[in-house]
Amino acid sequence: MTIQLVIYNVICVSFFLLALVSFFNPTKLNITANRWFGLFMFSAGCMVLNAIIYKAGAEAQYTHLIIFNELSRFIIAPALYLSILHFTSPDKVLKRREYLHFIPFGLFAGYITALNTGHQFFHLPAMVERVLALLMAVAVQAQLLIYWVLAWAKLNRHQKNIRLINSNTEAVDLNWLRYLLIGIAVIIVTWFAAQMLQMHWVTAVTAGLYLAGTLFMGYFLLAQKEVYPFDEPELEEIAEVIKPESKPLKKRLTPEQSAQLKTQLEHLMQTEKVYLDNELSLPQLAKEMGISTHDLSYLLNDVIGISFFQFVNTYRVEEAKQLMLSEKHRHLNLLGIAFSAGFNSKTTFNTAFKKETGLSPSEFMRGKGSLSIDVSVQA
Image (cartoon, rainbow, N blue to C red; front, side, top):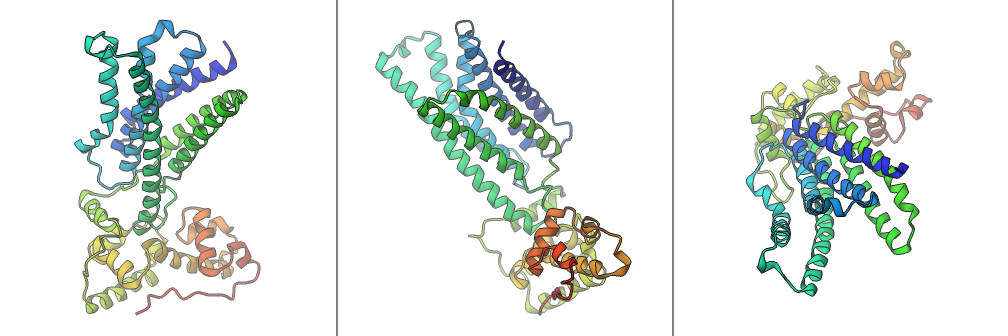
């Protein structure tokens, strides 16, 4: 057995094991999303299993298994898309219409089953069978392209939406799924290039890439936190807050209510410093103010004109500046200052600080601490 075949066997087993972990989901987080992701990994495992069968020269012994595995190609793209759909949506309910995504799988599965059971109706001319085989191949590629684009757009929208809800986004931004999509695109392009240019060495390299990708997915899948860890009433309000921009929020507050709430919000931020809680979220701040999540979102985005993420992190940047200039906190390094100011990662801290001040935290520490920013809520 060659090293390449050993790697493919490890990849195949890993895919199936991760599929089981996703289906049974010991963490009980993102349940529906994980189940769809488990189906995606099971289908990917079936595709790798076919590669193993062909490389072992065992096609004759496993004809029916090969056919089943080939049909799994119609499952892999919609399963990944539906997983991303549920990761990025506060609505955690599985809807029956989601199964419509598997109509192509059902059609081709029915045809292949009838063809292999010897049904007289399906004894088609050789030319027709070749056309159908070509149609299946084209349908798989077209399906993969369409769902890849839909998944990419869904993740882009999600990364904008969570800034309306969360003050720290790294744990829920699902960047690992973006990297997964990029990896899939690279593998597809590399495979086509290898076929066209007869670069057979690429096949050996991709085996290692598949293994690395499998380990990557397994780690981030198990490490992924609940994306929307809120109660049902809050989830319903969040779903309204993150609805598409083509459906703008109706005017919810009078000018008098807006002025009163801005004063209350400024008191919470400047006096009680609620932004120091690095898990602060829009629903949590709304509870502190005694208003609905929807009303607070309207106050921030439509009245003040700033996202929740930017609003909270502006205060955190000002807090970090004060800590940097304080003799009492000279013992803190930049990471300690970031945590003390309410950030939960150095990356978010650096990005927010640079955006607000035009300087990196280290540049600010090197003697440019005279700059300040006004973080008070403007009337």
